[in-house]
Length: 170
Image 1 (cartoon, rainbow, N blue to C red):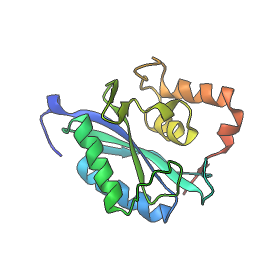
Image 2: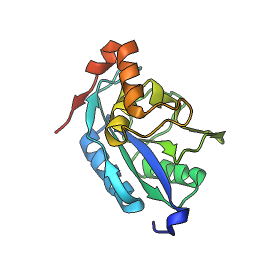
Image 3: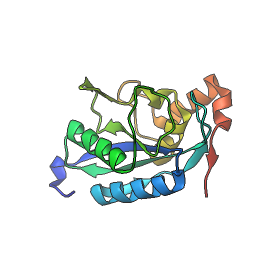
Image 4: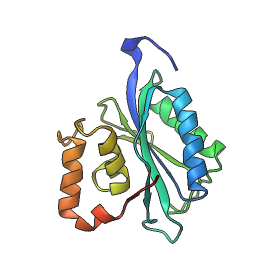
């Protein structure tokens, strides 16, 4: 997606999968890499399935620039999930082929049409915060006004077990 510099919006997207996770993360990364300018990716981490009985997840965070609005970009992520076999059910915690969550859209704070920015789990899900901190350690969370590196250290201090939940892959 190309656009004038003034129309570009920095996005951060978490990617997760526990059904054929290596293949699905690779495919999702390729698609997002083709959609975003100045694409970057965090390391990939393995984490146990939390809140469900299932295989381990692979997780990462990617970033880049889009000219799409936040709602349109989020819809695009939902379409990518569906195209990669994501089945949506009423049950929130289930195994999945692909989970793409828009974490940040510039410094926008938003809660409308099912889209909440910044994504709340940034603050308490180590499988989101650790790769986000790897990618943007000095970026400041628009609500807490702390860097993602500071937030990660805070999470480790309040939930020491979270430090051992992730295993780097590769």
